Image 1 (tube, rainbow, N blue to C red):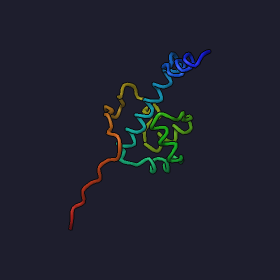
Image 2: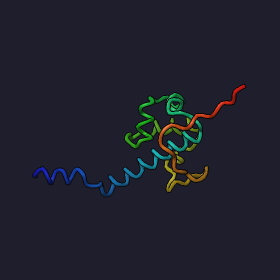
Image 3: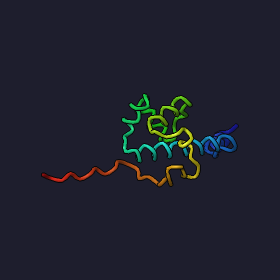
Image 4: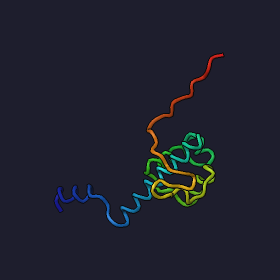
Amino acid sequence: MNARARSDRVTRRPRGFGARLLEVQGRLARNVRWLRVNAGISQEMLAVDAQLQTAHVSKIELGLANPTLKVLTRLARALDVDVADLWARDGVSERGQLQNLRRGRKPRPVREKK
């Protein structure tokens, strides 16, 4: 196999099971982040509540990690949702419509001077 054939094979989009796995990882990542932001907690706070490393929570939210069922159960418990809410399809959950989230830090509230 020549170098061009190898590079084509690497850059192709996955098909079948691989494509579905990426879709599920992306949905899980978006939903975990959305639920965390709506709960008003940071990744660090979620990691402490779920007894996970902050880096692992970050990788889950980026879609780079494949969490086990035990990890997903801990996340769901820490976010006070059902495990099924982590995989809500089409951005819809029993709690309402999932909205697009802005990347980056949330603005800090303005404190009034006394």
